Length: 398
Image (cartoon, rainbow, N blue to C red):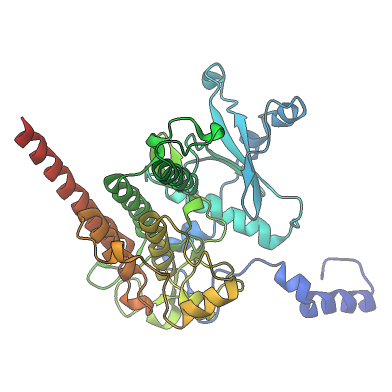
């Protein structure tokens, strides 16, 4: 304001808008550092800097594709629409390689806060390039970006196909093999997930989140990880997309960066991790501390991962018969979604493994929940155990 040629009255008016407007304040980006918390020096280098590549984004004439109806909107999240567009790189043009273009939805404003959420999304995508379980980013500019295209839908759509196939199978059996309606007459047996496949999906979910949490993580004086540097803050089945048969974690515009307490910088290691608050925590997939609007850490992601395990295990969504407000109150009181006796009492290796990790992820106190890497390693061992047992059975059959 000091650089504007304004009268003192006009300047006072603008200052009043600046400092006293709730709408203006809510449109500002949340500062990375404050009086209490700061980024570690090594993490501040990347947390505070982004590298927009606007030329790469604008060289693709996707607007003409939209006008000619050669591309149509594929879907959307809360903040952005997703469009399948052809890669403009000459070597891929003939192969018709698709990329996912994400653009801001029309109902959202172009504010500093919204620009910053998509800057975070781009920064995190770049930091996680080394992980094969996190989607790649190709370009970003403002609120838009190019990302890997999901060739096989999402984990949510995979589970939905499984639910439908199971229902069709049960209907078919109950009607003596005549249960399929004409529109469902195709063979959907391939959509039904067996226990081994379910365990494999659960492992991929945990392994992707572990890679996410381990990137640039904070460490204690012994070199052990004390906290993730990045928290996703929106872990659901929709956030895992199938790219060439591999589940990859994506969509980081709700993510938060973990910092340290300023007065802990000399305590050894990277210092004591400092949590964060998010102003709005809707829906039924979140942790007790999110609904209570308490301090949040990476353990909110771990809790939500437990809900994904629940969906994989039970073929149900958490709290699907409860209203949002009732579900949130139940979570804060320590209640958890209903589990059938067949799953509670099962001794199947895959079911027991997912059940145990689900309950560990659902621990009420964040500090009692395991890190994602622990869960991924545990499920990996159980997968290996099942594979050895399968091989043993094959050998016996021979």
